[in-house]
Length: 193
Image (cartoon, rainbow, N blue to C red; front, side, top):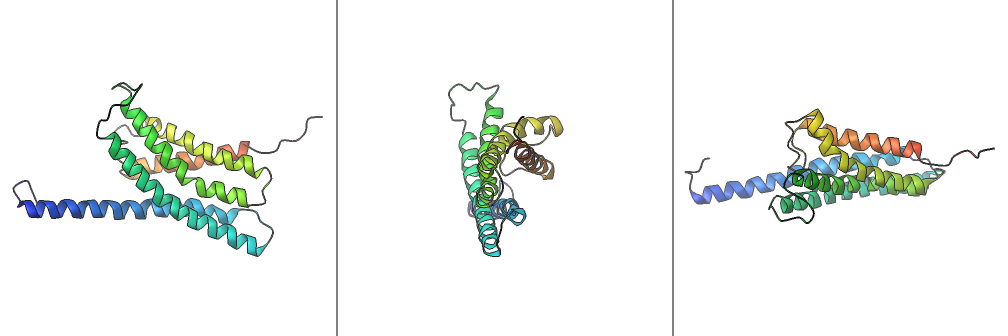
């Protein structure tokens, strides 16, 4: 297919391309959301019935948040790609700000299942750990575009979902690493004597 193809064929190809984009993106981020929701399998609990509730909530919210992250991330990325003027953002920093906003929104949504699982578990200081998981999502969104520009300068951070395995791995590794770091330093401290 090229620019000399009949208009009807070009229109059908564009519609098919959009359909494939949504199918692949929903599958990709739905699966990633399920993986983050699968953290429910590691949550401490006291009974089998409670474990079933925690795992069900984790997996269903993981799938739902993954799908929602893809939809909202796609719409936000497309909105920013229309070159709408942003207050307090100049042309030099526009790409970094818009990329950070998209990754901040999607990363925050991707860790909501882990935060819910933490709230439902019997872990000590579960509320502070649940909040730290959400905070890790926000920080990961801010850090990913900068990490990508250092580790893989040719990566296209202005496309969503991440294009290529390198950018996807940078995003997910940063997100998972920050969640682990934030939850490990959050919690009850021994009393000073």
